[in-house]
Length: 266
Image 1: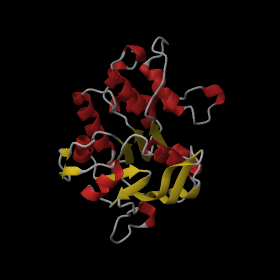
Image 2: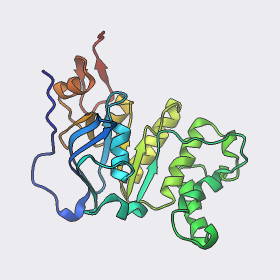
Image 3: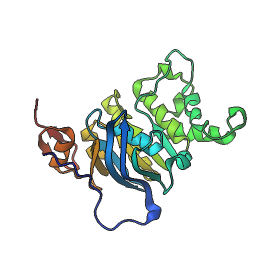
Image 4: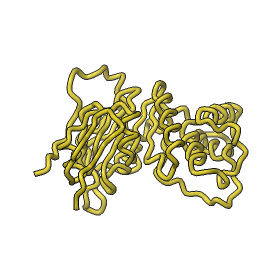
């Protein structure tokens, strides 16, 4: 039988002030079908948590639950000890798919500024502070020189940097990323992973990814999710947990090393 117990980190609990995310026995159903079941998770300040798991395992739902975009059928979600809706201004989010019309003549600069629209301004007019933050965000992702280029003319990697900058322009304390590097070349992936490793010195990051080797290289904690969550508060995931989540045998799991191999299976 697959091992399905939800794990939490062991040891002495850090001070409550360092706790950013807490999910307690959280379940989410879509039309009666469970997307998350009995999830317990605590994320501390400046954690860089990577979440892996099979397609349809609830990874996007987990991030949306943290954002308060999907209601929990059971359990509680808290950010900084409050419901997520009260902490929206402290969170940046890069969704799995950012849909836009490639023919629409909007520059990278304007896309990033849209990240400030959640802040109340008369007639949505941007302030000097908004513009300064946009410049800093573009500079942080290394494309300040492309701020006037139409986003439809950018490469996939450049576009993804724009979307990350749009999240960073809010100066978030918590950054949630849903498959941020899908369809991005390997060199650009490495650059952005290094950027995220730098950003985590001033914010907490939770990232969903299918890239097991990159996850094991850059993040400092890994969770495995397939409706149920397998998490030990470290980069270590026992083979039986990964096998239970993916539903297939494990031949090799090199903890903390950029090399993970799944044995061939039907």
